[in-house]
Each structure stands twice: as C-alpha cells, then as structure tokens.
Image 1 (cartoon, one colour):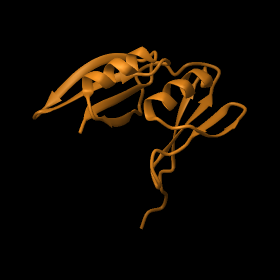
Image 2 (cartoon, one colour; image 1 turned 60 degrees about the vertical axis):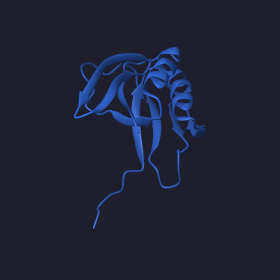
Image 3 (cartoon, one colour; image 1 turned 90 degrees about the horizontal axis):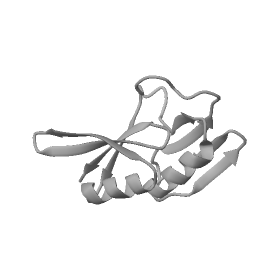
Length: 116
C-alpha cells in the first residue's frame, strides 16, 4: 500500500511567467491555478501528474537532481519546436535502438524527449 501518491512535480524558477509560457506550449496545457509565486498547470490527462512552478530568489546551482521524461511523435520536429520556444538541445543519447534528446527549458532545467 502506498504511503503517498505523486500529484505534482514542482520546478523552482526565478521567472515563473517565462516557464509557464514555455511549458504550456510544450505540453499543450493551460494554467489550472495561480497564486503569487506559484502556478499549477492542468494535467495532460485524467489522473496524470501536473507540473507547477514556484518562484525562488536565486537559480538552482549545479546539475539538476530531477528531470522530466516526455515522449513525442517526431524527435527532430519536437527538438526544433522546443528550441524555437526558447529551450535548448544539450545532448543526444541512444541505447539499444532507443534515441532521446536531453533538452533544457529557458531556465536551464533539463528534461528528456524520446520518440514513441
């Protein structure tokens, strides 16, 4: 029996508005709720995990200890779209025929995209 259920992944940022604009476009969702210093996005599907942003005074230093894994239909097209939104492509990896890209949002928060 689970003690807890993951409901939301919270990303710290010094610029909530910039990351909300980026991630609502990448995930194709809208803002669910907003209070000063916090914004929660709608879930992509019923029962899914939501993403939220918390404004902090200083950026996180060093490599992120947490990242999101996302899946896309077309890896090259998604990479291009993410870069056009202000994200960046950091690395490409391949293991046993599965290829994924390590990307970063405008704050440098890393996330991965892999094709179905």
